[in-house]
Image 1 (cartoon, helix red, strand yellow):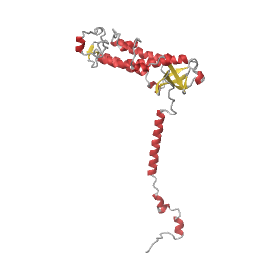
Image 2 (cartoon, one colour; image 1 turned 90 degrees about the vertical axis):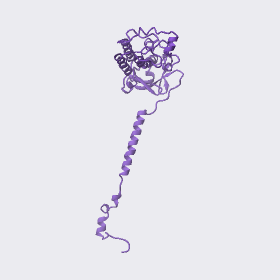
Image 3 (tube, one colour; image 1 turned 30 degrees about the horizontal axis):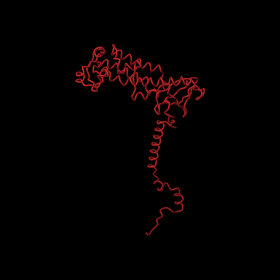
Image 4 (tube, one colour; image 1 turned 180 degrees about the horizontal axis):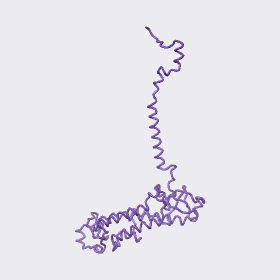
Length: 290
């Protein structure tokens, strides 16, 4: 199987395994789906700690308002009495005014946080270092873990405006957010390898040959953003190792230089002509007045 090291810019994202016979149209769709799926998991994971700490999200017309303003406007959260966490709630006021403050108890909080770590580990960038290929199945498994944990803690479900529920139901609205810039529409996605765009309509083997054991670095790019930067000749880790070796070598040479004491060469026992001078009576000769 061909192994693709997928990058976004200069940042590693994940490893992907495929065959040389795959069409680039299909390859781009599969890589893009994993990329967007990982982003979805990350967005849900960023909301889970808030859910565990402060409970469900308030309706949009109540968010950011003070208690007095809510009373004056006669607003009421109709989901407060329905979406109750298992084992009862503990009140922890959300200072931002985004959530209702009825948080799950410590046991249910632990369920959410442990599941959060498991889901993140499945699609983590550390999988690149471990040389593990990420699949769409792993992304779906991470989403199912998060969905299951939310159902355990909130058996009656979350309100329809809660971002976690919207993400799990694919109803999220990312318009105007930073997250929307990271999402990659499949029809706008491009794969680049060796400073060349891999054209749709061709197969992977048209670029990398028919060797199924090939490993290449590809960059995922949006159409219209131009060619990504070329890969450096050496990686950042290799550069660090080279600098470390150079520094160690310099230290060793410095120690050798400090230890280079040749004063013993002036001693009598080190004189190669000492025996000859003794036979010729030239030892103990002193110059100067007596």
